[in-house]
Amino acid sequence: MTPSNSTSVPNTGREAGAPAQARLAYRFGLLLLCSAYLHGSLDKAFGFPAAVAEMQHFGLRPAAPMALLTIAGELGASLLVIAGIKRWLAAGYLAVFTLAATFIAGRFWTLSGPARLMAENGFFEHLGLGGAFLLVAWIDWTQPALRRA
View 1 (cartoon, rainbow, N blue to C red):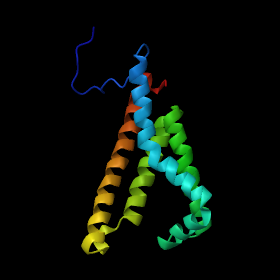
View 2: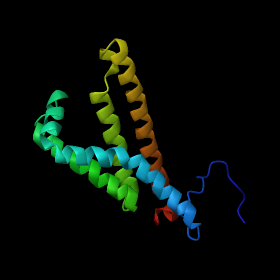
View 3: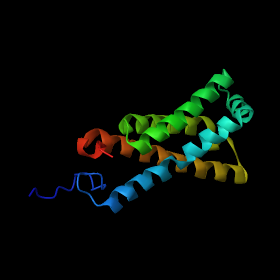
View 4: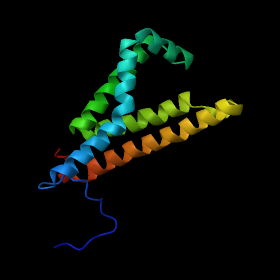
C-alpha cells in the first residue's frame, strides 16, 4: 500500500473499481460545469442573429464567423469534457475561451454604479469557471488512470 501524499490528486471516482456513485457524481459535476456553455451555444445557434449582434457589440469581426466559431467551440468542447474524449484538451480550450471572453465582455472597470457591481461579480465568477476548467484539464492530463470515463 502506498502512503498518502498531500500533493496527490483527490480521488475523483474515475479509477477502475470506483463506486458507481462516485463516477456518477464526477460526471454530474462536469455536466454542471459545462451547463452554461451547452445552454449558451444552443441559445446562440437557435437565435443566430442575436449571436451575430453580440459579436458586433463586443467588436468581434467578422461577426457571423465569430458567432459560428463560438457556438462550435462551446458546444463541441463541452460535449468532449462530459464524454471524457480528449477531456484535457477540451477543458483547456474552455478555460482559455472563458478567460478571453471574460476580459472582452466583462470589462467592469469601464462601468459605474450598480452596473459595475453586477459586471464585477460576473467577471470574478467567470475567472472561477476558467480556473475550474484548468483544474479539469490538469487532472486529466497528469492522471492517465483518470482519463477512462
